Amino acid sequence: MNYHPSLPEHNDNVSHQRPVREFFVLITGVLIFVFIGYWALGLVVDVAVDYLSSEQEAKLFSKVDINWDFGKESMPEEQAKIQSLVDSLTPCLAPPYPITVSLVKSDVVNAMAIPGGKMVVFSGLLDSLSSTNGLMFILAHELGHFKNRDHLRLMGRGIVLSILALLAFGGDSGISDILASTINLRTAKYSQTRESQADQTALQALQCHFGHVGGATELFERLQAQDAEADFGFTHYFSTHPELQQRIDDLNQLAQKLGYAVKGTQDLF
Amino acid sequence: MDSLTIFLILLALGFVFGKLAERRHYRSIQAREEILVCLPATSCKKPMGNSSPINHVELVHGHVVVSVDYFKQLLAGLRNFFGGTIQAYETLLDRARREAVLRLKESCPTANEILNLRIETSSISKGGSGDQVGSVEVLAYGTAIYYQPASSQHSSP
Image (cartoon, rainbow over all chains, first blue to last red; front, side, top):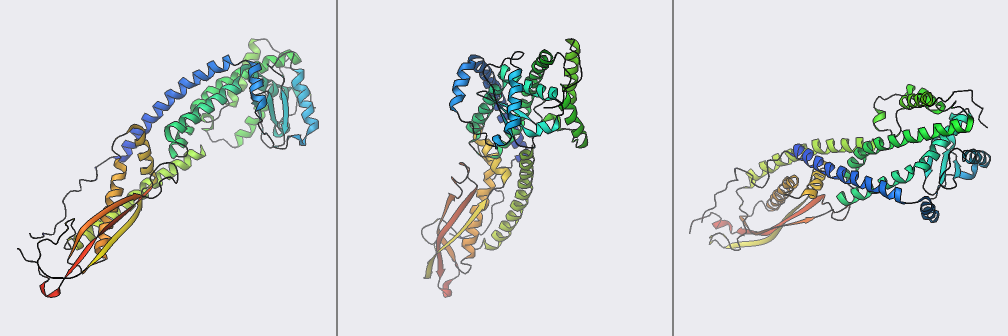
């Protein structure tokens, strides 16, 4: 037996694959699966939210201590004023249960509706507003979310998405990142319609409370002026709130349609 | 948005540098294999028909740890979802095995023959992050035979 040194001509152990094409085929397949799952479970969430009564919700979340400890007791005076503003809206826009306001010291210009009747207002919002009417519109907008149960819907969808990502890819992998980003587009679209609805509710409440809708668009106009300085062009694809100009236009159109007047506003506090 | 950007950058970097590293490694493997092809390494248990007296034998081994790039790891993760051959990992294992054998041969350049060659593979990062296998260790070991110098020429039986 002689040994003839030679190397194989072909390497049969390595497929001549096209990895980029394979990647796109696979990622498209996975995303289709997850989108269908997310859409279907989203409908289930909507049904479940309609089924869950306000009393049950209040009971359910009263036991859950969501620790919103951003130092909320630091501005007790303003917090009490906002609480009384929210309470004064009750005849026009009755929330399904008592709402507790927490004022949080932060530069963030926003407010949030949290399940169980907690409303978080960031103090940056107060700095961006100059009229009570403007603030009242934002508070009514959040009350609208409570009334329409949007806080539950969005939370339910968030849970559904986390579970889907966990099931499909298990915890921490890059694919979950892609998924989160692309699904964000859909969630954004969904929540844009919810936001528009809350805007409508808020506008009606403002008319009912003040007898006119002056100041409704104050915050949006102010934010738009800030945005104009730092415009990236494609930010609206990722924002969960409808584009500011769109929102202002919608509100103005609705006010005109319903015959709401726009009058002068009161100074904040 | 930010996480998506970072992710895409990682993906592109993984793809480009993974490809470059793989190509370089294959070039090196091919060049060294051509040099070392004269040293037979077989899985036979006995010398290949050579009746020359054996001077001495020794246990030789070569091992290597190789990792896949981010892109291929992700591709394999996606493949997990649908099933099928994970082609993305084929070059990883091919390179690792050949490199391990090359290192084994390089550790005994004056041997006449290597018998009883065995190759073992084990995954390194299992359980580290998820259940994905990021890198493999391949160990090749065998018995190097050194014939007595006077009869070092091979002859047919």
